[in-house]
Image 1 (cartoon, rainbow over the protein chains, first blue to last red):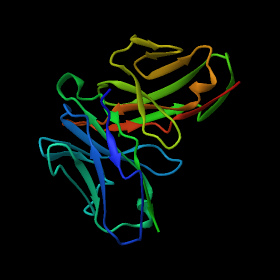
Image 2 (image 1 turned 30 degrees about the horizontal axis):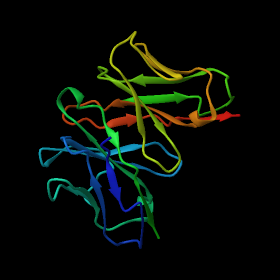
Image 3 (image 1 turned 180 degrees about the vertical axis):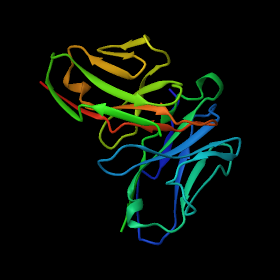
Length: 115
Length: 112
């Protein structure tokens, strides 16, 4: 069964460093998403991406965040200058589009720890 | 602003003891309500989508129902492996590739 994959599973970084989180969405899906979940809190939407551009972003997704689909399979989230409060689980998700546009399948997550 | 409220926050049941989890939502024009299961340290795993009031979906010991204001996830004769956090979500108001607004979840523990 196709699934969303994410790498690395755990990333530790120093405050102020740049990090790139990587995702491989399900191959025939057209819509891609990033969410985050701070420990003990709810899953929060960051950004959606379709047709090589950002479709929607939340107030959390400020100028220090960016997303890219550098090739036909990967979808990345970059955090330019990490802060302590960026420590969280980051989930990538994808959906088919059209009638199945809203049904999103999630990856296993990357745990980001900022020291 | 879209709101999703889940109750209870935590629920501890004995194996075989049936119960229901609640998800109340406030959105302008519901375009689907989603139930996910999340195990510790893992990503949300899709369970059900409901689109209109009165709709019901079933999978093994789980049944999801939807009204105009809330959804219930009924768990019948649960087993320890049903222990997880159950998340409810609705599409954010707005067009495009809609992100989901999640509730805080119900942490369910089934004791053998």
